[in-house]
Image (cartoon, rainbow, N blue to C red):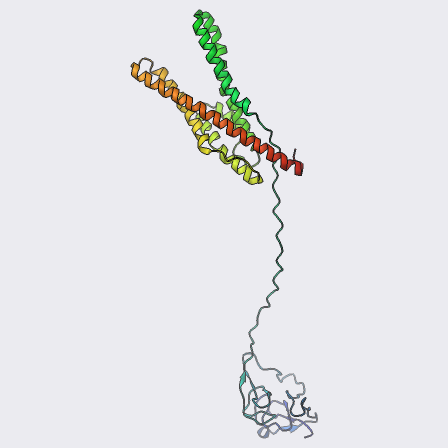
Length: 324
């Protein structure tokens, strides 16, 4: 055959031997189709081509509308677009529907290749911690108390006059207060070792608030009780190694100090009480005082070990990064 047949309904070009229009499905004989001058295309296999040849027309669609299933001829594989009752190539009956997925799919981006996360930079302590002497701080509590005890015993045995004893009373009181004042500096020193922008208190506040009347009783408990937690937090922030402080020991010390002081006031206030009551109070006071001394030495020893461990750790870190 010399030319294709143009459908009289939709003007689509069909093969010369087509019975139905491949675009609208109308019977070509009924629509009065005319033959075109465009020659028929040859089949790639020498039998039948896989698609009709059409002249380009703006009003004629060239693809199946979305959502409409196309049908494929079971004999020759020709796609019937739109579906008709017979294949325009082989005149076979309409075959199996070919469903096309017209749903738009989002293109999945390629997964980024896994890369090792850079290590978190290590925080550097603000400065190096100076070591402390355990013997000095423990000796500052033992030596003044021992000197006071010896001096008071010797002076009492000499039976000095009241004027001489009054003159010596002031130096003896200063000697007795010396361990307490030194211990206040010790509290300031331990908080100085863990100073950064996250510290619970500063060395100045830790020392100065202890001179505020009545508030100093509360402050003594808090400033000692919170130090083990502050020390552990400082180690964790800068990834340092150090001993674990006993929080119960640091809480027992201020409690025993206040208990000893309260029992001493009771002994003085109840000096006219019966002998049995006074004896019980004195025994309780001495027991609390001895327990307080034991806990005091343990706290000083543990705090000095912790500060010295911190000093060694910050020296090693500071040596690597140049902390002064």
